[in-house]
Image (cartoon, rainbow, N blue to C red; front, side, top):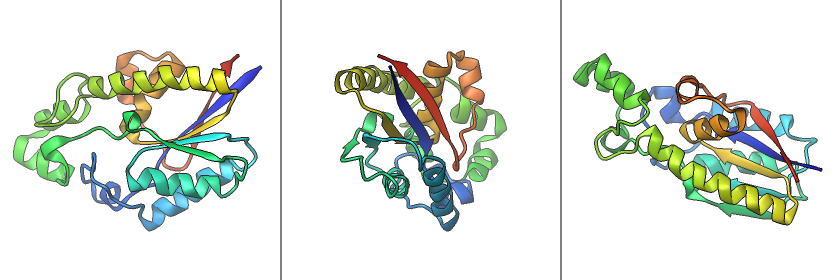
Length: 191
């Protein structure tokens, strides 16, 4: 028997459109983001979802709400912030352009995509991977114990460790991943 994980990124936000480091900012979906969420919802329409996971951030909750319109069978929604977006610390609310202009492209690249360097007062991808790893460990136990399929409304950076784990990627491969706003990833768990 197999259980399923349906992993997707929240729809595009106004911060995403403007090239702003969102991190833990509580921004809403943009008009395009709502369309992205509706596309994910249609893609998942014929799947069975028993339990859904979201983070405390509006964009995760809003996207999940669109998806669950097609899933009256899903009676349980769990908020778990171990899969929340990466905190960009002092970069949050600033544009990528501003950081490149002020700090230079090399420093921007280090803060934006290196594995173990934290931006000022923020988290590294390694930090995100550690907390997402803890979530995955508990998720797999939960799924096997309860025999449920799950939907996960995640974030761009928290999806990277999910995909590394389930797709057996290297850290280097994980860092190059771009996660779509309008699609999902499916993983089968044998029980």
